[in-house]
Image 1: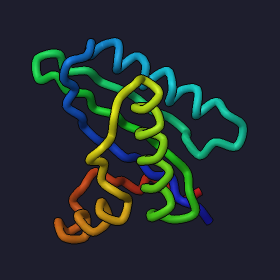
Image 2: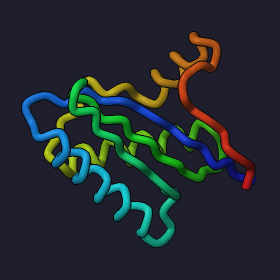
Image 3: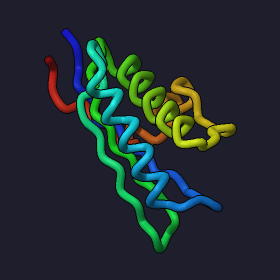
Image 4: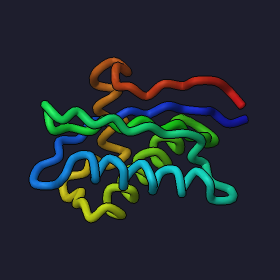
Length: 115
């Protein structure tokens, strides 16, 4: 059995054209989802010009929640790198899961359905 998980993350973008970055990230996530055998099922990117931030939502399929977080965060990070962005202070999947545990599983890691 596997799980389908939706992960949402927000990023602050500085010194770059916000909408170009959003378009580039979306294009890359779509390309990932169209790759044969990809665990990326769906994605969306929302740009907030006032705040200078992006919200990235991605839905992935994986054998369990831990693997799903790894797949989702790796896809998002890859898309950021593909647009020329840097992720120097990127949270590791282990750090993210520890934070989620500490917050009472309150992060936006949503198990959608068993597959």
